[in-house]
Image 1 (cartoon, rainbow, N blue to C red):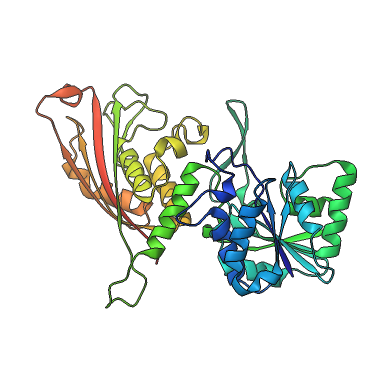
Image 2 (tube, rainbow, N blue to C red; image 1 turned 180 degrees about the horizontal axis):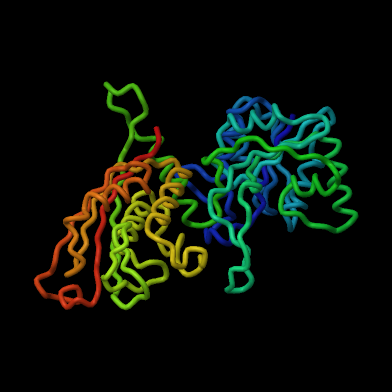
Length: 395
């Protein structure tokens, strides 16, 4: 068996000073973390496809990760496209290799168990990819218009390594070269040649480091994993993280006021891209900030027309899914809103129960106050909210 680790990309979206595979996550590079996972899996020939001019750096990382298995290793230079780079890796395979895995170095935290699972699932006539179910609501769009919904039950998000029987994979690459076709991954190329591709369960840790936010996510995961244990604690430590979020909306929207997950008939509505629920929105920012996963604008802003008019419970439920995918659990949330109206105390328990349910049962506490006539809230122009959230990584 052989694993081709593709590390030849430039990583322009990451914005680093070096090609993406050589950017540091901690004291080790993206490539080194990927190789650590590879060498923790079953023994295999390992071929790293590096950018031209970085072969020496790639070889250093490869040999350091390999230890006493250096005889299994080789570095080759990649091409202008990912497909050309994988083809270069295929050209370096030993003659007796029958199964080939193609792995993106950018999926640096992929568990070794996922690599082994793909290896074990490859057959003589079918390829295998690890994949995660698609949780987001998917929309088909044209320019700024939402055209239609897409049935996500038929969709999965593909990961790597992707595994294949060698002879059909080489034949598929020869066919692609002959036709000049370019494919986004090896499974698509393999399927286009008429071969079967199956999928197995992937891992949230096998996410692809593409943007600065992805790099920060990887750093947080490694920081949590490296946290020291108390001598009396036998399980992995759980280091909590705290985030803060604020939101402000003015009165002047259409329809009914939505606040703290509830409708308030007879009250003036808040304006906003969605329902203007400042309490729910502040909680979303606090949770995302605590986990280092961006902010509400990144996940639910105007670039996501599918959330136009959505209510706060939808935002919170999706935020919980985002945190879960990044292996964070929600501890508790405390939020206070400032405004002259509505009168909140009689519905406090109902609101806390609604928001808690949207967050999977996490504890939610809501308080309300006025500003004694001061500021825009005191003048009755809108409502402001501030939330604090506690999250912790899954042990």
